[in-house]
Length: 239
Ligand SMILES: [Fe+2]
Ligand SMILES: [Fe+2]
Image (cartoon, rainbow, N blue to C red; front, side):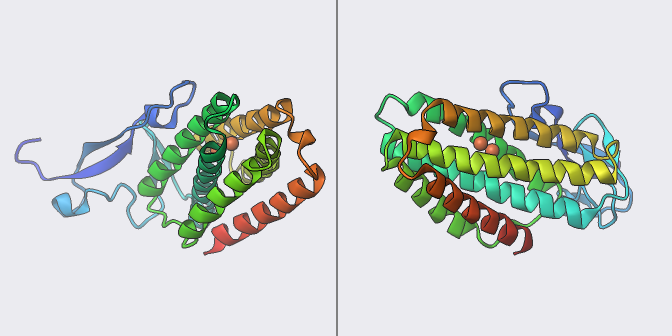
């Protein structure tokens, strides 16, 4: 494209969304796009113009007339949730990292890292600002993970069951919203949400398989954590 004016579009390669892959390896690549009135490299992060056309993944799918407020709200709150989940598992590992259960927790944490990476990429691609509460979720997530882990493996797993049940319900609500709006338009986004929802359900089941229900005051603990999750979701969608 020598001599031809060009802008650079940010393209998230299909690998980055990990559909059908186990690794979910992530990458963001800058690819040249024909000039359509851009201003050179100054606009290199302007994949999404001010309008409502969005390129999703390297499959070339263009999302026209996207419901921007809904998509932004989904990405913001999901990013916050995955960020918080990472901090919870970090707290659990800080306490239980030298016990026999560490590989179980580490495996779930690794998937949460992948989830967070995807939403970090989506935030860049869709130019969504994170919730202002991120520093609070950083601390609160770690404290929740560590404090429940101090109750023992069962306490950590009870926390996992409570949180993952809330998050999978939350993903289901989002999936329902987008299905009602336009399942074809949001096909790839829905695939991503369903994949993550299924992995959160696996974490939930892992918690039950590892004696979550034997935690002290299991029902009270679970309900308290889920009230906190609902509040976190409510706030992260809005601020
Ligand atoms: Fe997750
Ligand atoms: Fe999870």
